[in-house]
Length: 115
Length: 114
Image 1 (cartoon, chains in turn blue, yellow):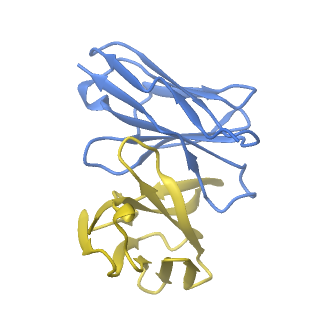
Image 2 (cartoon, one colour):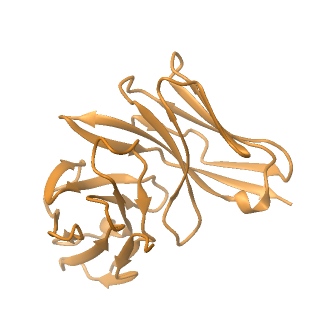
């Protein structure tokens, strides 16, 4: 069974540009989470999508946005990139609320570098 | 507001000895606590979890202890092996506005010395 897949693996952008990151969850998982891991910091919660709806959002500015498609894959968009957006962006999936204990299955991440 | 804290950024242990990784939390409404392991250039992988109604959960070499009164949990690895060298994240599941949220600590880098 395929795990969570993310693309691209690496992405280099310049300040002010936009970045789009993609995630495909494990088959059967309807929830997708996005986390940011900046250098030296832990995993900061960004967004949670379930059944196509945004369910929760972390403490990030509105230029971080995303969506979930009918096949449960997800996209994270970061507009007006800033240098401090350079980080590893991790996507995770899980069964929907009520059918899990908080266990998340992570992809290998997309490394975004902003120059 | 860091609700889940791992105060030790790193830990070194000799192979065969016990590794103890600690985690503190502030939100008494968390209902599940989890530990994840992360190797460089890979995503975190689930290791072990514990419900807030229990005080211990064991899985092979890994045991998680929960002290609710102290809002503290720990992960014990016995015996430690070089392959255990990784960053360990403590996480807690809670609910915000009716929706679940998993909050992670900042991680502890474990080095097991052969």
